[in-house]
Length: 580
Image (cartoon, rainbow, N blue to C red; front, side, top):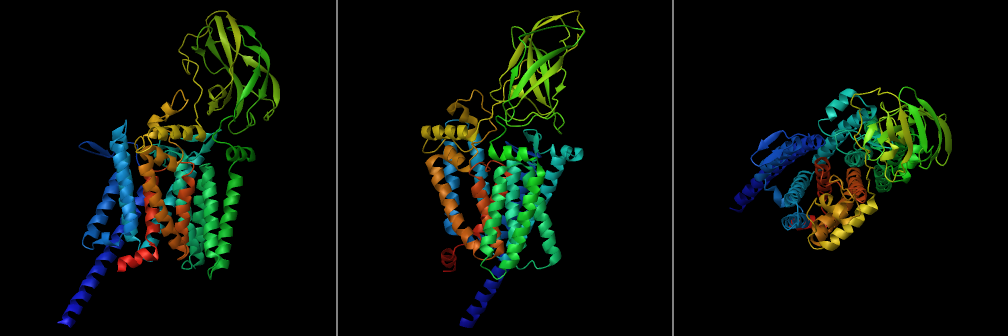
């Protein structure tokens, strides 16, 4: 009887092991497909169901989680989830749901965001269970590297301005982002910082694979070095400062963790090669001035500013342009160069005498005779043509960076006008191109302004916050901004959680973070792959200090997968609890 019982028990154990192995294969494949699909969320929904529209990535997400659920049902895989971390995630999602239901406004938006956190928790759980074996972890990491490679190629093509790439990417984002006329490539993502965060995680995981003792083939090592070089170059092309810091941190962390191992010389050499590649890519990507401006300032505030010394009055005939002498001082931080790839030149606009109505936009361009550095004053003679009809107008002086911006639209721009008297016959009766009124100056709130608004928001709703993802819809009321862009987040993942879910959500978020950090430490101590996973978690934590990513599908999916990979390395005490 005892022997029969032992035999039945052995059969059950073998059957359970087969079910678990099947789940790992299915889940790793499903999560791999999801990771590759995550960056490509089309702007238009691909499927409509009653009361809901589903995007391309949401369809892939439902399919992946369904596959994991079906494969895991017979194996009872939920028993393998680290119980403390699962409770923490459940508490975070519950806090988000409660905060959404009690949100003072925009409850449907808050509920939608709470649902995203719930989906992230499911992805985390599926990854944690699937990645218990080293082979399964490696399969998921390889999927992330494949996705990072695809995104990187698109980012590089985006930066190069290839027409076919631009047409393809227009299905996933609104347009190209720039700062100071410098293209900030974003590939298929809406914003460059989102692309950077995605690639930072792939970079860190790739470092772990690179220094892994399993990857001894020279060809494979060379291929991984090329892959990391491509990913690093793409992060550089996003022009994201924290992305550079995150990659540098990943290099230091993985190198330090591997220094005490038996392969420390090989690991140190490979890390050094990647570091040199990254440095060369950075210094060769932009001019020294643009790099310094970007690294030392937030956005392009005060990059382009001018003070004009212009005649108070000008008089001309509609049929003949005139020459107007004037001087301009560069009070910004960027050099004005009319021979640059994005040239700058003096121009003007004709505006009504008694209103902001534009009579004629974009006058004749007058190039600068030589580059005008910050603080320098240049004297030149501008050629000015009339607005096409006689009358009294205002001549508004302006500088254009070709196809990028007019100085008059920059924040705190100082506008300069001359009174213009125009005589002669009407020479133009058509409809003029350009804005109908003087455009408003751009509003680019800095992080301190956004964080101050979040502090006031938290003070007004300290317990449950204003609802997940509602910060962007409400921050204008808690700041001195006349206009608030509803697409702008708090630029801090932690502040976003605090303002959106209050103390209740913040406490549960910290709980999840502490348990993830413990698991990442366990991962870091167990080998090179684990070191890469720990570095990816570190990149998320560091970049989260200056940007917020949880509202964007591509990044929250990969963040959940990365945290799941870390949680698969449950601390020893928790593993023992499972065995007992």
